[in-house]
Amino acid sequence: MAQAYEVRGAGSEEFNGVYEPDPHAKEKKGHRMKGSAMTLEYNSDWARWYLTEDYKGGTERYWCYSSSSTPPLSGWKVAGYGTAPAPSLSLVSAAQAPPSAPAPPRAAPAPPPASPAPSASGEVLVCASCPTFHQAAVSEICNFGKTPIVVAFGQKNDAIDRLPGDWRVQWMAKVVQATVQAMITARAAKATVIFIDSEGKSEATDEEWGMWIKLRRAIKEKYAADCRGRECELEAKGPLDFARQFKPMYG
Image 1 (tube, rainbow, N blue to C red):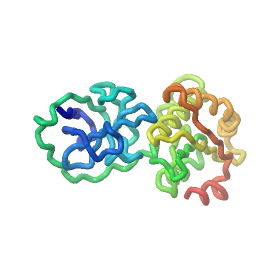
Image 2: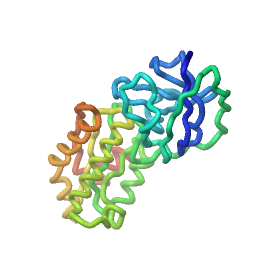
Image 3: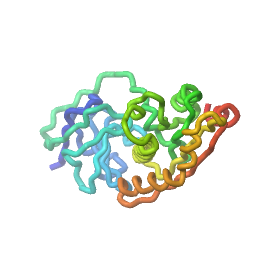
């Protein structure tokens, strides 16, 4: 008898419901909530289960690392487009599953800047360093410009800036986490890390650019640890002059 799964407790409420085996899924392990676009799928390349819309990359709400041939019932995590809390799953018989009413229409949530959809080139863009006097304009372009860009640079008086300890360690940890999470969410293995020129006005921004080799190594190590030893491709772009280079390229 075909096995169905009930998703409960998802912060993105439209994903709560019963998912039945989908004979039209590209992956043999695909499931769909009846009458909706909500899908439960396995990606063999990444050895991860995802809750998505119509099996599309860049719509991931929740994911769980597992090589099991059946969806894991626990251990789910919030992906870039999801809302906490993450759900749990339970087994139900497809023959006994109640019909799932389509989710009521609702406005699609705005994609968070830290987890963009994959770009046409199959990579993610991350802005890792920006002087304070350009941060507002750069953030605007990252969030609403031609191409989604992850905002990972440190900002004065933000939560991380107020933490005790060496700011360099805190900055690097933030950029590493943001870059790796963006690649995993976008199912990409390539990232371009952007640095904005300080124009000679910010020693900290200049120092961040000087830490690129160390940052690159840390991102590669974190990506390999989180992705079962896989390698990623990283490129640094910069330091870019805001007005003459960054804004025309991405604004």
